[in-house]
Length: 221
Image (cartoon, rainbow, N blue to C red):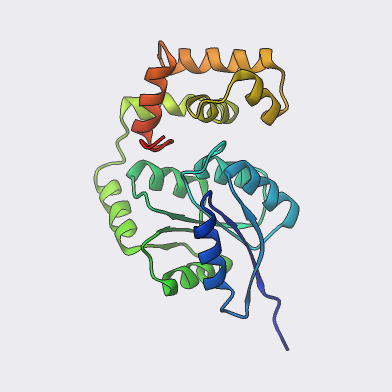
């Protein structure tokens, strides 16, 4: 009797990464790629629409990053398991994503067998981490999970404010953000004001520097 294949959605803003991952996974007859997404917001939509068993996501995606996308997927009570595949191994990322409930965190230099093992572990309800990530987790707990005051400020933002925050530092106008989130410009202006106040920032330049510090956007941007 043939078992139902494990359905997967791949979310990464780089086409070549999505194509490479698709080719790798489709070599296994029990894995099926049902969709792809170019940003975190699209990833959430695809999970809602396709209800895959697993979504493999990058962190550094435009419009909505992988951390906030993972949070929205979990808060929506989707049964989809989340595996993070990223080039970043920042302790803050690891800590926050594990607290959200992701099932795996792999670095992009992981070998193909690691990715396959992570998928198998996820569908069984287990957590799979790259060896170096496991070491970071241990070090983090030994270090008493201390957070910087800057991290604490970011944690005061609501989920919606975090969405707006990312688009602000990516250069989106109030009008464009309102269109993407289907909210009025006045509501977005209110969110922008609250964000600046909560983060104690005086201008967009400092906000961008803060976003780079947090790893929400890359320096190349």
